[in-house]
Image (cartoon, rainbow, N blue to C red):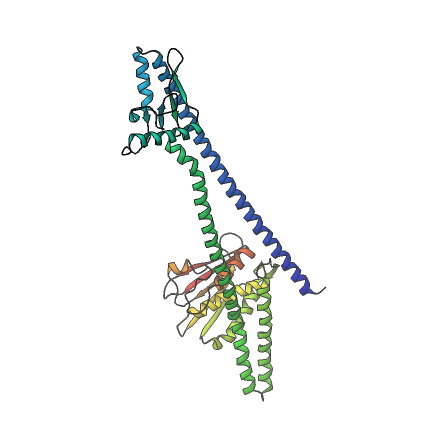
Length: 414
């Protein structure tokens, strides 16, 4: 089985696992949303049931007191309680005779009923009859009898307006929440697709940016070969440099292949790694259109657990950013490697005498997509921080910067 087949299967497995995780998250959020809706329905129904029970107890009390008043006309205390209970009724009540016809005058024998008083007496009666039939379908009426047991009046009632509104409130809330969830899902999906599109485009630009240096160098070496083809020594020297550029192209391909997977770390001396990157760029800085000197102060005995290819990528990004920030003729990049003064670990310091940054810009330069350049997608420093912090367990940050006085980056490695 070829290596390409193994890698392809591994990628498919990772994609399948990511897809499963995404669906599990969606299912979890759906179940959670349904649970919240169910809880809202249950809680609102409980409140409505309590209000209905309270209204029913109130109307039962009022009806029983009123019935007693029909049987004992001389009891002033009873009439007082009837009046007190009357003031606590906030739901529709209509008094009717034994045939369920509203008692006239209608305004005196009904409570909390909004009836159009501009209607004729007959029209008011028909409207009240229809309303009484609706009340009867919801709750049975209370009957008031005289001392002989004869039904004098019947009291019909229904739920108050607030109870009726509360009964529909959960469904309104669910519709509103569902609308917000739908709008939020569409919005976040659109944002995510745009971000993914930008990341893919940015990665393509970053790949072109990475490939640009060795390719432009190789074009320069080819031109030198044409010019110095009769000088064997020069041809051999140029061929070695071209070989280094070809090796670098291979390194770049390996770097992008490692994005998204856990790299293998090994304990190596950092000095030679930094020296290798610095030497490569030092030879090619004239081709990049900059007159910059790279000074190194390296403790060659210091070691750390790193992925050489990814760590070199970080150093290259910092050197490139420094080169692009330098606009003066005496450009200088200082790279030092030393032990941390406090705590264990090593410290890599990259300092330049470029144009520097404001505090506001410095706080955003590691954000994906943020860049102050006319060209570029702002992924170099973002990738560098991820390589150092996520893969190597270290830190990458701006230690010092000031407009017109350059910038200093620190890399702390355990």
